[in-house]
Length: 102
Image 1: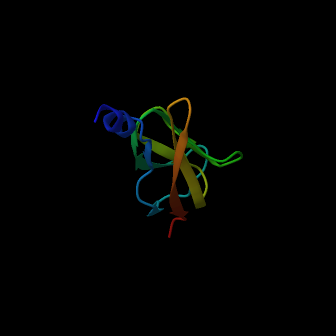
Image 2: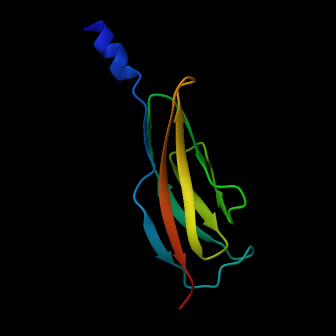
Image 3: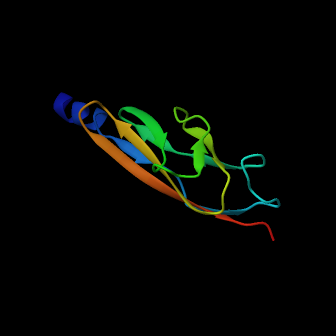
């Protein structure tokens, strides 16, 4: 019984949330970015949000489960939630499609 409980406590969970599509009413730029809320679930270890290298987005606070992706360009943005217990790693991805102003 104790062994089973220890195994359950070590299970890593990374859920980056639901994919979203957003449209901003203004033209995106460095001076006028868009903010897209992201919210994930992490269990069994420490976590951090990450984005691909050379991505035009920035995660506002990568060490909070509820944060924002700050975008300056339209297109497809990938954001990863990475959970680790120091031995194993679990990841999940959320896709954010940002459309231009009408």
